[in-house]
Image (cartoon, rainbow, N blue to C red; front, side):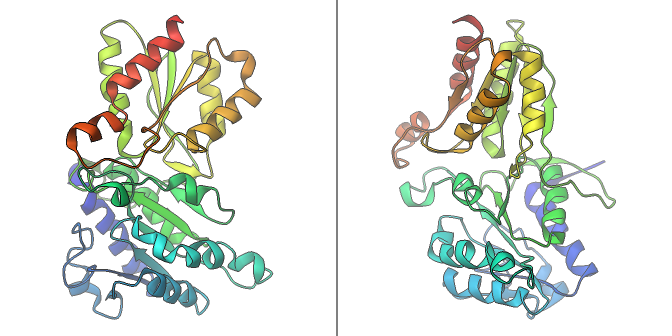
Length: 325
């Protein structure tokens, strides 16, 4: 199996789907002439032309609205945000139009659209460019929210997202575009809403998603030296969430740690905690631990940023707390 970068997996998924369906097009800031801000659309303008790979003005509300409207005439757009921080400019279009078209039209219109781009922190980009929005969008009925952590999952999930007849929020990371992983040459998809057990274990379940899951892997490697076995679940899809995979794992390990790169109030980890406590409380041998960023805007200082973000040491402490306290 060949090894490719995350950005190449994203580009392949979009290109393959566009070759198969002429109703699919890509639009966003710098996606065409510049090959994408993170080179995730490299070569697509040359292959598909300016009518299907469209550079937009810096007007997220405008081009989101154009794309959503185009779904009502039979198109299946992919909208790239340079970062999901910029999606806030057009969030009215996503929440009040894309998510509600099917219901408000009495089922006369679907909205097959993908909004994709990076989420959460990407280093020293300061407070207004370092926010995680997975739980924001997941809070909205009508939206599906996908957050892959590696090239294989990214390609398979993006192809499924593009084929989906409902709006999908597809969240990546600036710090993952250069990540490499094995991706098959042939056609494959990964179903939306199915989590993946990345590592099997017996002592504690760690649930995470997106780039921050790498800290769980680091922690698991260190804990293994102390004969502590961690089962790591990659949600892959935040909504719909694979509750069954989490519950089955907790029933096996009897302990749960949730790692998420988001503020601690009302996030994805909070929802998981509720679901597990309401459906598997009797299986828990310790209170659930959740790990998030500090409850402040993201700092610019690299020293403060390191303290603000969750890391492997935080995971190790949380695992030992549920095991020994």
